[in-house]
Amino acid sequence: MNAAVAQAAAEDRAATGTRIDQVTRDLTAAWATSWTAQDAQLGAVLAGLIAAAAAWPSRREIVTSYRLQFAFAALQQTFTRLADRAAAATLAALAGQAGGAPAVTRPARPVPDPAVPPLPQMSRRAYLVTAGIGALALAVPVGYLATRSGESGRPRRIKPPPPTAPILIGQPLAGHTLSVNAVAFSPDGRILASASDDRTVRLWDVATRTPLGGPLTGHEKDVTSLAFSPDGKTLATGSRDKTVRVWDVATRAPIGKPLTEHEDPVRAVAFSSDGRLLATADVGSLLLRNASTRKPIGGPLEQRGTFDSIAFSPDGRTLAGDAYDVVLWDVSGRKPRARDIKGDTSGVLAVAFSPDGRLIAGAGEDKHDDVRLWNVSTRTQLPQSFTNHTDDVNAVVFSPDGKTLATGSSDQTVQIWDVATGKPHGDRIGGDEGTIRSVAFSPDGETLATAGSDNAVRLWHVPPAPQRTPA
Image (cartoon, rainbow, N blue to C red):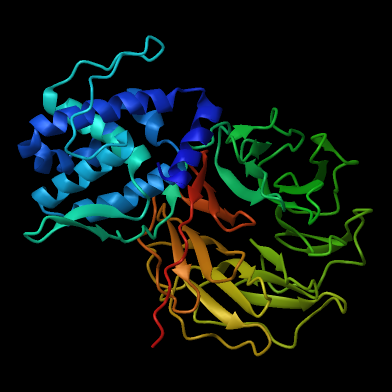
């Protein structure tokens, strides 16, 4: 059994208590037995194999792990290209690996385990399809399939193309009752925070995808934004009630009283990378605060528009905001840079710095590009053209390695992009039933959180970026 798949199954057992191993052994043995008698049907069986996994809820736990879903996505792409006979040989080889015997060996009839619920009544073909799911899920060496080659019948290996689009992990995180406006991972990646129009903030255990206690309450109107401090000990939130609140993550209690200096709804909050500064922005003003005392440092920064998004550069020396163009401030001098970053745009709705601080991404209502990149030092736009969404882009974030971008749009989809080329990585992903308002990468870059107007938060496994072939 492949070690990675075995580990995924072990994690599922720990999370759900389901005896997946016993169920799968029964399914594998039953499938191998059926194969020897149903060889002629296997071509048709393959066509429905993946669909059967989703259509049989009573056994869906077998493929709930995102690692198994990743494997199935790769397998599905390969199955569509295999001839019926090659596919039959593939499944036979997999069954042999699962049972520890040659593929053509008929295993003994399995002895039912009284602790395992009986299989539902179904047709012979349906039984074959669903049993095959068990063999594939836990027997396949991820990334390889065995097939027959030519007239010799000798086995050969085919490496299926890996999936490029993110893969949904489990069910959406449900708990908010209105639109979710912002999501953020803690610096260690263990906690996800979400802010909603239902006036609450929720903390989630990323590993188990379960809430950490009840909602954080106190804001009197929609919670629009949030940010973890670099040490992960505090969480800042902004609201349309014109206040900023700071929370102790461990105790889930507010730290001090609400910050009430803003005269308009707070639209964005951000910590500097060293944790010493907290920036908070409303429609009409942008304040820098001492993060320890939470008091403003001087008056509002000179402003040139309305902000939906702000971000500190990784070195903490520059603060960026979206105000039609992208505005940059010198943090120490508290003044805008000599000139703004301009582009062919109808309005910027989100900004993000690359991890090395050399690039800044702006996304929004551009007529030609979903995202534009600029060199921060020269203020010049890069030639890459990021185009695939069909509506405004409301959120943008760089992956931790800086090689990819994720965007969320009013077209109800999320797109992953190659930063160097501007090309999409795979298709846009859906699942959300409304506008995407926020996207966030986990610190290791392997998980993407998305949220929006359907009240839910979703976690996605992000496949490794395809290797570019040198020109």
